[in-house]
Length: 248
Image (tube, rainbow, N blue to C red; front, side, top):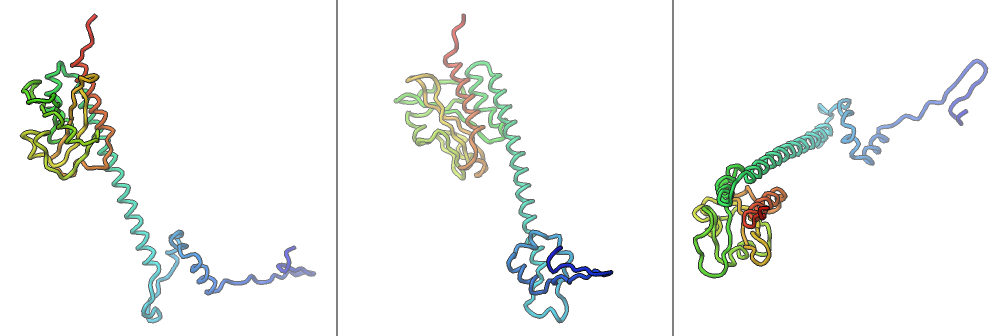
């Protein structure tokens, strides 16, 4: 049936022996497929490490090399997995903190209570060291008006602090007195968000700031979705107090 594989005659069957693999064949295969044992580490337990006088100088135990590589790969994957777990936990914790902060802000009654909650309570709820709300006044001297805790700034201050950005995450800095007042010496990293309080041409430029005494709590490259969400809530709630809906 198969050419050269089997012959039969009266009362007997004979077979031709298959060609056997030689050491040279195995060596050639491994040279052509250098990652074979890395892909099949289960075969390593069948290999004997060269030992004794026949091992000779300069002979490398391939099993140890491959096992070392596999251990490093497993360690790297384990570190990546732990980093992912830690990051996920931190993100969930931050999400819960922002939810708690929003509910707290929505429970405030009146503009003064809202400003006090922003500047006095948000830092605690968000596990930070400071929170500030700064509003620019029109050109001219700064007047001491507005609810307690509200920072008043000269015209153009926010553009000077923010440049053209609407969000700024800064690490390893020294807090600005214009933003943080007497807390400036405590702040080493900060998140700043530009706000506009009010409508149209009468809208006042404002700044919401979160600060930490740790130099790397905030840094460029961090996600800003939760920060923008919380800032949007602050902007809208304050706007509602500044322009309350008419009573019917």
